[in-house]
Length: 310
Image (tube, rainbow, N blue to C red; front, side, top):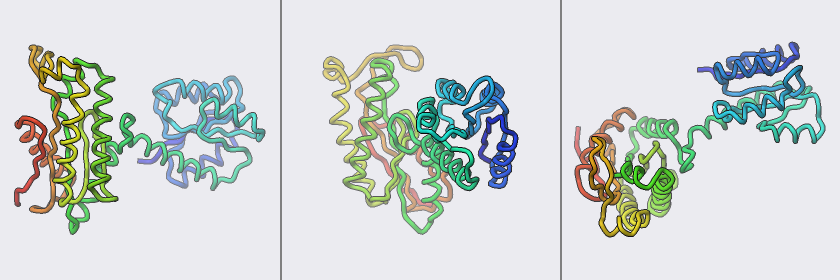
């Protein structure tokens, strides 16, 4: 799917030049001759990047930029401001309004196209990382697993990590404390892989209390045990004294019945291509799901590895 660029500029000549150049590069381009029309177009279908002229009739570029930055629907969209003014004060005003970059007219088309590509690429990379842990998210996780599966001659191990009783903890202690637990697990994983894994190992955060590590099969046992030991020794500190002493918390289950939920533990399901060929990332996910169900049937923190053949 082509990346979408919206040009908001009242100069038809400039708009045509930029449009022609971006179309040649495979972008999908839409245009607006003033800020109000541009805003309506953005709210209807947000582009991947906005080229925004500063000097326009009615609502100028700075005002449009501020409105976009103050709206959660558009605050993430890269904005490149275009202007014929080259003084520092004007550039500072543009950055203060929330612009990501500033291009002075007249400009070289190759440079403008290069900047557009760079900002779209960066925006997608940022979007691909989990905002809480800073770890790669689903898009990058899928790409990494696909890459490992494609290299069929190379052995790999995908570790799927999941917390037990996390929802109950969140219900009792609140999401802010839950977020601290999420970040704790990320830190423990990073330290374990750094000390016991390889330089090219991959750590990802699927979302919530689900994580991924991709490493070599000969590393998984040590990494898994280190994560479990660190987690089990650290997690009681996230409970109050009474709950630690009891070894559980009391809250409603999914059927709205009050139940006892033990102190959180961690389950690690490990999928490898040591004993069988794996042909797709979907297959990895299916095997991991089976193993996770098995792991969650056991009490306490545990790691399980798929040793089945065929």
